[in-house]
Amino acid sequence: MQLVSGSSDIYCNFDSVFKMTSKNYLNRVDVFYARTKDLITKYNDFKNYITHEELLRAGRFHFDQDRETYISCHALLRLILSGRLKKKPLDILFINGPYNKPGIIGNPLFFNITHTRDSFAFAISRYLSLGIDLEKVNRDLDFKSIMKISFSEKECNYVLESDSNARNRFFLLWTRKEALLKALGIGIVIDLTQVEISEHERYVNNESFGKLVFDSAFNEHFIYSKILLNYYLSIALPHKANIILNQINEENIDSYLD
Image (cartoon, rainbow, N blue to C red; front, side, top):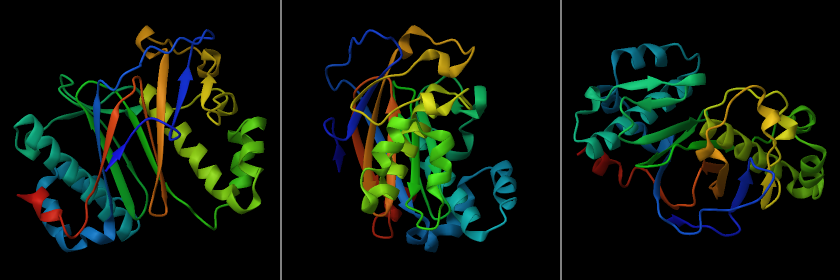
């Protein structure tokens, strides 16, 4: 399944003068996603493909479902990277950059991970540093309280424009913000309300990010969004790309374990 540019993507520019440079689909990004319950029969197998440190980290989760999601996600990430890097899964060495953005020594490939309690996704690119966020539409979340401190007035108006769809619109914008911040490798901004991503083209003021210095290569970003089952998925990257979506489930999981 392919996610292409169109109504699903927005353009963010960190320069007040708009000058879109990415006109062609020159890059490919592969996105893999799954619901944890669809892979539960392989859970014990997954433990063979993650490191001792990752197992210890998984053990710190309070809920079993969080632990199962973490192990499944990291094992499959290692398995897929293994095929591309021609290395054994456990020989791949990850590093954490500023604000704990994960990477691989030498940057032979770029990747980013996201997981909720019952699902996960990760994106892999040969050339593009990227960010990804996946969120389930939580019917119990008091999203209006979060919106007041995280969204601009314009974004709040966009979310509340339709009462019947307000919750979905909140999660759409939330995943966009998270994906953009992760793509930039940024943990916390001074004022999240200043990072507006509700319109097709947006100017994002550098001052919203405090004293952080931006490389000229990151003057623009594209954010792609998609509804997958009952989840919102957003991917942010510095150039347009062909984004290929791959759902992993009980029918095809064995092909990833070969």
